[in-house]
Length: 58
Picture 1: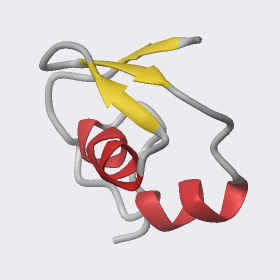
Picture 2: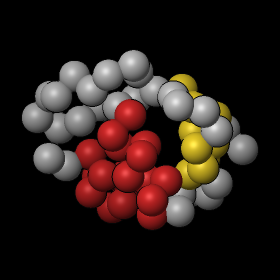
Picture 3: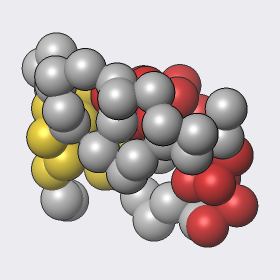
C-alpha cells in the first residue's frame, strides 16, 4: 500500500492541505491509514472523497 509522509507542522490554512499531519491522524482514527512513524502513515484502503473532505474540514 502507498505510504504518505506528512509535513512537520500544520500550516493552519482554512481547508487543511492533503499532507497535513492532522488530516492523516484523523484518517488513521477512522481506519483508512495506519501510523508507522511520527510523520509516516500507510494507507490501508481506498479513502473515499467524503471521508477525505471531512478530515480536511476545519
